[in-house]
Image (cartoon, rainbow, N blue to C red; front, side):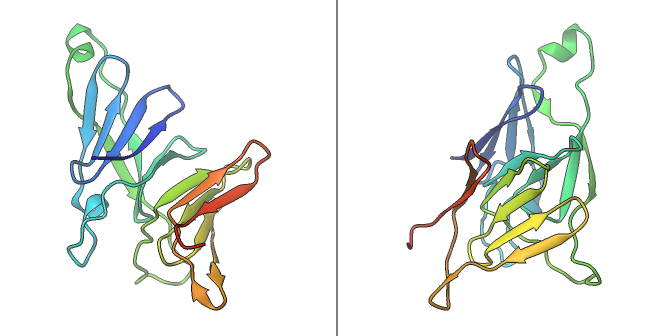
Length: 168
């Protein structure tokens, strides 16, 4: 089951799946990566890869704020061009709230970047979060005092952000 798709700055297509992890297609070969924390929530529920984005520094974010990933370029040569296999990457510390070392990662349903490169994340029950590369800002989404569950965030051609929900 494919939950999301994303085209990166090099033109590669990325697919987030229900429980297989992440697949990348470069036009010739298929690569994949899997880390349990990306698809499995701490309470043993399955989240899957619901969102993928490349940030302004060329690092990738996959469905939560715990880590960001730098992809290692594929090795040159005839053998490397025809080989499907795991994506080579390094993992870096992700987003943290200031002064909170015990903070749990935020799992986001959807993510977009604005014109400045700030990342905007829509969560299922915790509103919207903005990450400017250093700081996190929380925007609760409520109607009549009730939490609104979000499924998607979208940036239109004018730069306006739209939130998608099945409730309202």
